[in-house]
Length: 312
Image 1 (cartoon, rainbow, N blue to C red):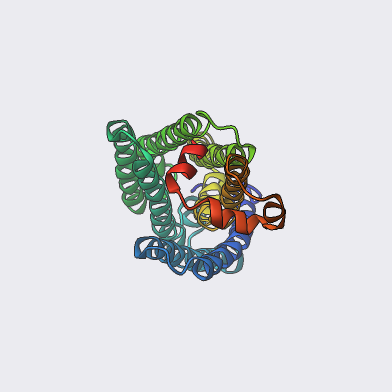
Image 2: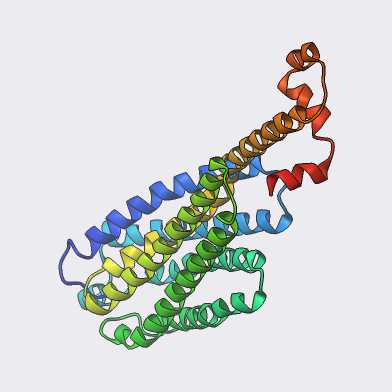
């Protein structure tokens, strides 16, 4: 990390850290809400959430010590040239927990795509860029510890390019695959507006998540290459893992709202089936008028084949 002026180094780190702290508070609330709302989730999901929060806590610890160094200590006892050109060990140490949190989030997206795929051969398309991106990421992390000072740190540019390219390619493939699959499955023969709304929400969410991952990967790459004497790339890096983890937790917690929409859709479909069924069966008029919607549902929807046939 080189220094050109106060505003593009310490100022950027301070702003990014403040934003990071605010998102971290929101992330903790999301994690608590997740464990309270979905206590019956699989052990895999609970462990995934717990591990990402653990890495985020470690990352916050490194950030706090880094800001102490740059804002309070301000290079006391450190040669001026070293303070200006070289990244502090806390600035380097915060890279690993942040990248591990991002790895868990991206792995969650890949696994979700894998389980959603009808033909697994298409899901293999994401494995190559995912592997290349993360191998290059860890090589970059190791080389930054060996070359922490500018301009030597610019020798890591090929690893940054490979890592960012692989990761935003992965994000594009996942977003495109999920949107195409959801559209093909959801809009084929559907007439219920609430069901279409549910599918459209899932498509928009896949697009938004993919766009966010691409935006941060490209932003970090461009600023690292074009603005090497500033801390703008470090500021983007600090915020990135927070946004990744927050997006994953939002996806998990939003299942309650999506299930509510799905339940309303099922209830509407059942009501339609009840009316159709009742119209084709002989019932005394007074009894039919006295039956509530719940009673009609209990009487008429006992045949699962009829139910699914009508829904199709």
